[in-house]
Amino acid sequence: MERWALYHNLEYDSSEEKNPRLIFYNEKDEVVKTVPVKKMKAEEISSLLDSLGFYKRSQKGEEVPEEFQHFPLRPPRDEL
Image 1: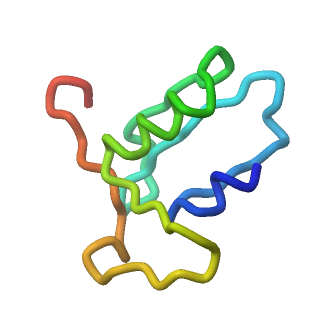
Image 2: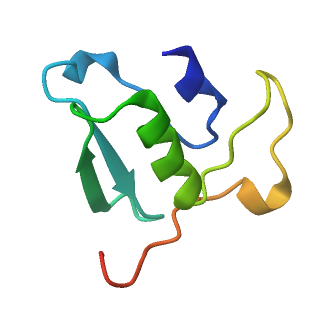
């Protein structure tokens, strides 16, 4: 999906269409959180990514600021 390409450090894999989910990894490539998204609307997914600190480019090719170059997830302490 084109909209997900705007998010830095996010990969969209359409092979999981039957059970789509977001999988969040830490710097050690360990899974820290999995969120099923099958019943979520695109706007809800975008809001979730924004709330977790993912940088969203305004257009393809836009430079990503230095502070967003590394892992963007700000883990909510009560959820992880």
